[in-house]
Every structure is written in structure tokens, then in C-alpha cells.
Image (cartoon, rainbow, N blue to C red; front, side, top):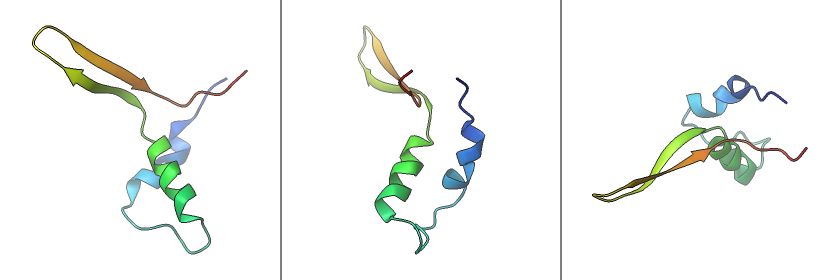
Length: 59
């Protein structure tokens, strides 16, 4: 399965609120889900922990 994140770029390109025709909670969830990549979660002098955030779907 291939996921096309570019199809959801419209969620990240604007800072506007959800349109009246869209549930505001779902709009926010879509914006958060559209962010993918490795994120630094914690860091200390001896090690750094990263988390990968990506869309996963059951097969």
C-alpha cells in the first residue's frame, strides 16, 4: 500500500479554522495526522530518543 501525503497538503498550507461544512474536531485531527516524519521525543547527554510518526493502516 502506498500513502500519498501530498493529497493532504491543503490541511497544512493554511492556518484557517475548519470550514462550516466540516466538523472542527475532524479538521484538527486531519491537520495533526498530515504531519509525518521523525520527531525528537527526549534527549539527554547520553542518548536521544526519536519517534516516527506516520500513517499506518491494518492489512
